[in-house]
Amino acid sequence: MSVKRDSFSVSITVGAYGSAFGAAAVAADFSVLQACLLSLLLFSGASQFAVVGVIAAGGTPINAIATSTLLGTRNGLYGLRLAPILKLRGLKRVVAAQITIDESTGVALAQNNESDMRKGFWYTGFGVYIFWNLFTLAGALGAQAIGNPSAWGLDAAVPAAFLGLLWPRLSDRKSWVLAGFAIVLALTLTPFVPTGIPIISCTLLAVIIGWRK
Amino acid sequence: MSAFWIAVIGSSALAFAIKFIGASVPETYLSNPRILRINTLIPVALLSALIAVNTFANKTQLTLDNRALGMAAAVVLLIAKAPFPVVVLGAAVTSALAYRYI
Image (cartoon, rainbow over the protein chains, first blue to last red):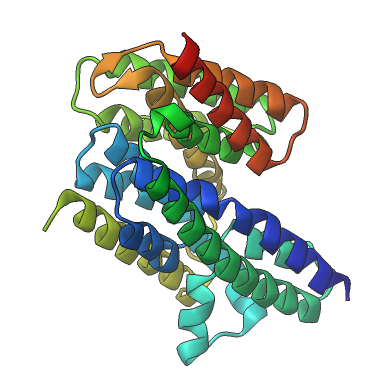
C-alpha cells in the first residue's frame, strides 16, 4: 500500500515540475511539439533542461546533445543497478529503460524487498511519465500564450530549475567545492570561447575531483 | 534540419541508448568505485555551470540583470525548504518584477 502512495506522491510532485520545463522550452523558442517530444522521448528532467538551457544560451545543437548526454549517464548506472532486480527481457527491457530515471530508481531502492522494489519502479516510472508529459504540454501551451518570456520571469525559471535539481546533490563538502569551481570556470571561460563550451568543460572538474577518494 | 530538431532528436536518441545499455550489460562492468564517484559528480559540475551561464551570461557576454534577483529568491526559497515548483515560481515572479521595475 505504501509503495503505491509513495509512487503517486512522487509522480504528481515531480510531474508538476514538467510545466516549468514546457514553459522554459517554449520561452527558448522551441515549438510546443518539440517541448512535448523531449518529454516523451528524452524523458530525463536535468537532460531536458540542459538541451533547452544550452540552446537558449546560444550554444550549438552538438553542444546541447553532449551536455544532455553527459547528464544522462547516471540513468545508465541506475539501469545497471536495477536490471537484476527487475528481471528484464524483450519489450519489457525497452519500456523499463525509458522510465529509468532518478525518481523511479529512488523509490525502488527505498523499498525493503524485491517485490516492493519492482512495484516502486514501475508505479513511479509510469506515474512520473504520465504527469511529466501532461504538465509539459500545459506549461508549453501556457508559455506560448503569454509572449515575452522576460516579462514573466521565464528567463529565470531555467536556472532556478537547475538549482532545484542541484540542491539535493550538494550533500558533502566535495560537491560544494566542485559546484563553486564549476561556476567560476564556466563564467571565466564565457567571454573567450563559443557558447556551450564553458558548460561542458566543467566535466573535467568532476573527473579531477572524483579521481581521489 | 533546424538546430532545434537536431538537438531534440540527437539528445533523445542518446538518452535512450544510455538507459538501454545500462539495463542490458552485466553489473560487473562500470562498478569501479572511481567511475561511480565521478558519475555522481558530473551532474553537480554540469548543473552548476548551467546555473552560472543561464544566470550571468548573454551569449558570450557576462551580464547582471533581473535573472540574478530571481536566482537570489530561488536560493532563499531552497534554504527555507520550499518545494521545487514554489522555488521555480518564486524565481520567475521575482525576476519578472525586477524586469518591470528596475
